[in-house]
Image 1 (tube, one colour):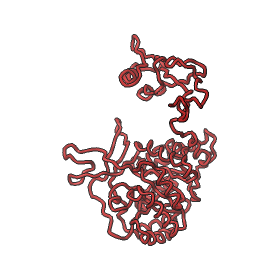
Image 2 (cartoon, helix red, strand yellow; image 1 turned 90 degrees about the vertical axis):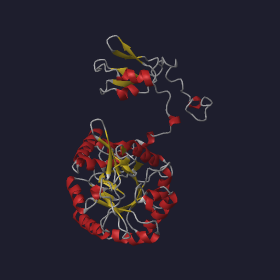
Image 3 (spheres, helix red, strand yellow; image 1 turned 180 degrees about the vertical axis):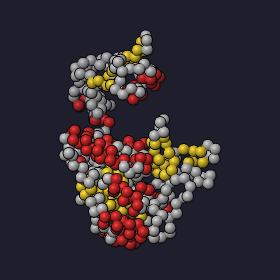
Image 4 (spheres, one colour; image 1 turned 60 degrees about the vertical axis):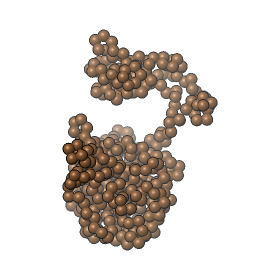
Length: 433
């Protein structure tokens, strides 16, 4: 059996599935239920200072995006950090860590951007026995307007400065949680590393408005006739999150910096994909809010079975394996050529592939008598749009053209660009010019 035990920054947990800092980790009751359900760790909902009280809205806090079957694809939340007293949270964290010493417990923190505020809270957090802290530099709403959250995460100099304070006044691992609301995710990651961060976690939520109530003419969720931007999360953000994880993992300046992957992780496969791109573990929120804490059991069993099938003994065996295969566009191999093929036995003659290709692509699918659809190799550019719109899984596949065979579309043999110096994708080649 595969061993799912994870060592992240020296913090051991029975599996790589942690609950992210969010409503599911708001209090002792929730966290105990999570650990009993099988979660390997939790990041406690973000703690604030004992300054002005945090007051959350008493109306709807979530907006939503659904798929055609009403499967929840994304949540927009306008909830702030914990509105419970700091000492109450610290006392609960102390009890939970004592009762579950084999689980990871991380304290998420957000306080004003001055050294004294961090100096005051960090010893109190350390006294709880928590395994580490996560600096919330990502929250895009409410707290950002007060100069915290993403307002800090969007300024690399602030990230480095606060991280240095935390490393000065706290002895355990410091994780910096990054905001995706920035042009180049590598810059804040570099700043975190320069400040001495032990790891980064990403992504936090994406600034968003998910919908508008056309009767009230206000964004949803609507509070007394008004709405605001919030943080977007859930399956819909996964592609954005994975790209940002990969960018940090392959950046020479942050290479080797541990990463905790966050963003739309719903299944074991999602987790494996994040980890293959360089994440040492993953954090989950929306899936737990959608399906309950026991969803982790499916993640554990699925990942374990997949690892057994692949021969991986531990999660460390495949972490980062896909990172070397993430490259820039100009280094893609133009010698690799595929063509679409339609399985006539599986085809239900719906015509979606034909409509998509005829109207919006390259007119490479022909409709023959009796609604039989065939691919014209001479026009097919291998875009695979037809694969993506076909409602029947594996009915249309992309088949690799053997080396030396002539591409009917270009008239070239596969392999004509054998010399990289004349490859059009090579930025320095004459062909590229």
